Each structure stands twice: as C-alpha cells, then as structure tokens.
Amino acid sequence: MSLDHATVRRIASLARIRVEDHEVEPLCHELNGILGWIEQLNEVDVSGIAPLTGAANMAAPLREDVVTDGGYPEKVLANAPERIGDFYVVPKVVE
Image (cartoon, rainbow, N blue to C red; front, side, top):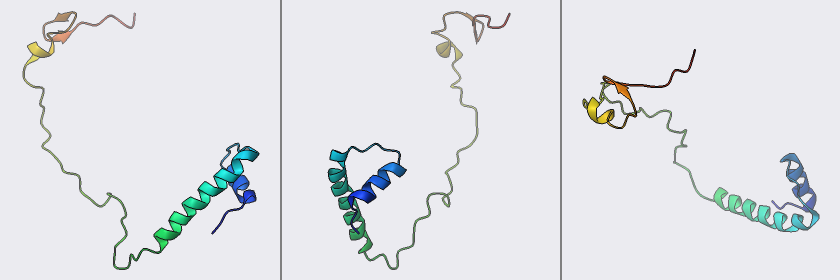
C-alpha cells in the first residue's frame, strides 16, 4: 500500500495536524516507510502461536495484610517541627 499526497493531507486533517505544503512529501515518505514495516510484519508466520490478551488473566501476588508502621515512633517524629506526644502539631485550618 502506498499513500499519495491527497491521502496524507486527509490523514493530517483527520488528526487535526497542520501540515504545510513543503512538509507533505517528507511525511508521505515516512508514512510509506511505516506501512512497509507493517507489510513485513504481516509476512511473519504466527501459526500455532496463541494471541496475547494482556495480563488480565494473571493473578496478582498477594501479601499478608498486616500493619507495618515500623514500631519506632520516636524516629518517625524526630523531624517534626512541633509535636504533642506521638502526634504532629499542625496549624488550625478551619476557624
């Protein structure tokens, strides 16, 4: 399959891409090159190979749902600008 200048202009119009007249020829050449690669891929023998449908059929590895806070609140709160007990002190937001 080979694209002509009118088809390239139509594709650019559908894609809402402004293509100047001097850009049509190089773009036509690039798109024809891409289509050439696709034609080469169509020649590959894929008989006997199951199509991939994505990772949806794979089960995600699950881990045990346990709290892991580290058990060291002093280290966690060491950089707090202000604190009361084991809590951060923050400015009042709502009056």
